[in-house]
Length: 266
Image 1: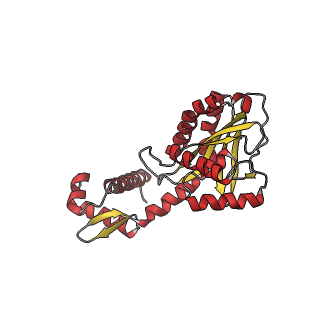
Image 2: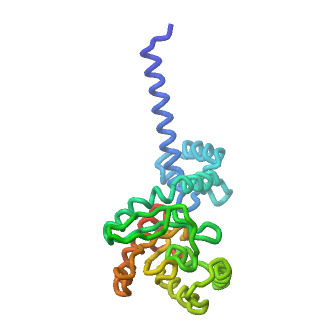
Image 3: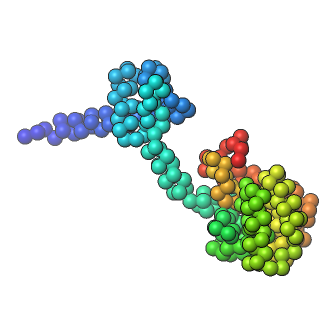
């Protein structure tokens, strides 16, 4: 009959060996993260023998975590792209951003919104009510125009001239009565694109003004936007300018959660 103590000790040894192999496998991935490495270089970087390094790397190639190219060496494989994509989807934007929105609302006293581009509209995903006795009619889950909202304009900061013109024309049909002409709107959008923020100057709701900025991912792609909104009496031109750095800073902090770096250009 097998001794229970001996079995437990043997199982513990196996678990420890498995954990060590896992750690070493992760070290291999980290070692090639910044560019391909040949076996001798990889072995030296890890402080392992070439045979051990080769065994680890071969297993990772079989599992598609690494690629191997003759005369080039080992590089990151397609499985990591798949996992990265899944991770980015699981990092739910409203969940990640909410605490930042609360903090920004507390700092400014104003209502803060979070939105994404949903086809041809801005979709509001979160709203943190400000401390001022001002009711803003926006609601979580509603879709608003792109050209007249701060959230929407911030989502358009990477769009081409042709795309901006098309959006303006489409929304002219869908939302007639917009008070800003096409030429003036395009001029404003060009300035916003250069500056990295956008304003809503009582364009979407009477007596409501907004300062907005985009949220970007690791590839500097716009994945959402935030805005600080308040009544015009609290949001004159001077205060809107003062809010720009706060809004951009908060959008940047949320962006960093999704891998964006300040030196990454769109």
